[in-house]
Length: 100
Image (tube, rainbow, N blue to C red; front, top):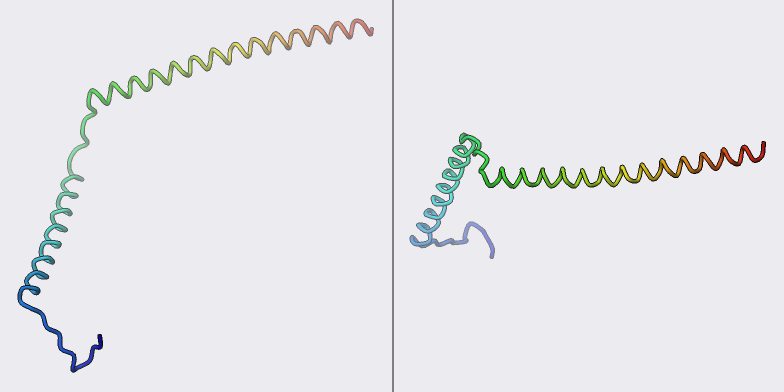
């Protein structure tokens, strides 16, 4: 395709109308969308539904229970470490007394 001052460009009335209608529709949808966005910004925050509250509550309770289980396991490990430390300390005392 070559464009020059001798180039002719033809456009039917139907095509021109279709292009204009399409542009008007896109512009109309744009402004409608912008209005909906502004309206949504002005709306108050939706309240927390009962179901959402119950789910969050259950999640928190499960988290607490898991944390409690982990703390109990850690306490058992600390008790084991204390016993091992006492045994090592006693063995060192016994060895020290033996060499003295």
